[in-house]
Amino acid sequence: MTNQHIQSNRAVHKSAVWMVIIGIIFIAANLRAPLTSVGPIVGFIRDDLHISNTLAWMITTLPLLSFALFSQIVPKLARKFGVEMMILMSIIFLTLGIILRSLSGVAALYIGTAVLGLAISISNVLLPSLIKQEFPTRIGLMTGVYSISMNLLAAIASGLSVPIAIGLGIGWQGGLGIWGILSFISILFWLPQIKHLNKETAAVRNKVVDSQVNLWSSPLAWQVTLFMGLQSMVFYILIAWLPEILQQQGISSDQSGWLLSVMQLALLPFTFIVPIIAGRMKSQRSLVIIMSALLLAGTLGLIYGSAKLIVCWIIMIGIGGGCAFSLSMMFFGLRTENGRQAAELSGMAQSVGYLLAAIGPTLFGYLHDVTNSWTIPLFILAGASLLLFVFGLGAARDRYVSTSK
Image 1 (cartoon, helix red, strand yellow):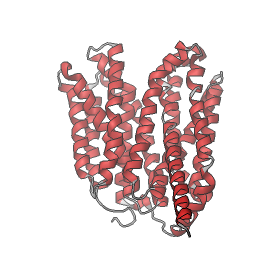
Image 2 (image 1 turned 90 degrees about the horizontal axis):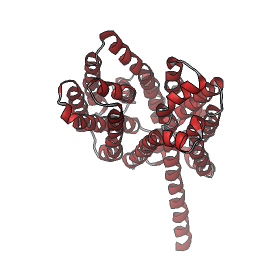
Image 3 (image 1 turned 135 degrees about the horizontal axis):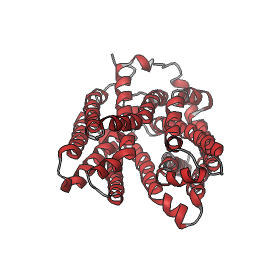
């Protein structure tokens, strides 16, 4: 083979790798934006469709329940149809779900929400597996790229929902439906890769077909699962209730909404930095300790701290939450030996994790109603920070789920 042919093959391979990276970025960008765009305009949806607060709350809870119920099935579907094809199907159904949800009518709203929830759960589970499979020596960097793409667009979608719906005069239907454009573009970026990726990864799938591990009996898998579940529960509790908690402390509704944005902005850089650092470490225990300390300090600051330092407490919680999310994503790749195991661990962890995320905010609000105070619920949040420390220390050890006792 001539030097010219070698250079040509290298150029083709490099181009294919970049197409995979771009595809991952676009798909990750779709995994939260269709969800975070709902919260700011849920009041408009409720008033327009004349539904109760409970039904309005289900618009945000239904996708989480879809994640919990469907995530465990996704690895089985991926083994049958291929990771790449399943991701493509998830983005196609996500686009259809967004369109259906944006049509007028209560039935269309909830059916579309369920469809997009099931679609997102597929990519939620399989993207960490794809990264493990395609970038085994760059798991940290690619997890950082994937995480920041997802969380950045989530924050943008949350901030733009009202301006799009009201400012552009297209109503809540347009405010939700506009994100279908992003998911459709993702389909276009992913389509050319299907043929290439299926050829490249067929051999990998064949090699690991016999390497089955019963994750449900693995202590390490359970440590990763509970870590994932608790960090997810903490995040969705804060997204749902932080403004209310701050308002009871005398902070205005406008300022409390701004502080919620500060929390989300604070976590963004750490969703990129932490995976890179974690990927270079054999054990991630030091990161677990820092993460738990920040979450605990921020939560106790909300209970006992000075109101003058409220921004500091919020930033601590945001940084701690960003570290926890990034570590949970990294554990799927670091604690497994191949892409198939990563998909199975991701499916197990996310099925349990999003069940906690779905019921956590409701129980948190119930505790407030019973006690007529946020103090006891916040102590529960502090307890969750300590449990994250315990399970995180176990999950951070340099072991594989296939060899742990």
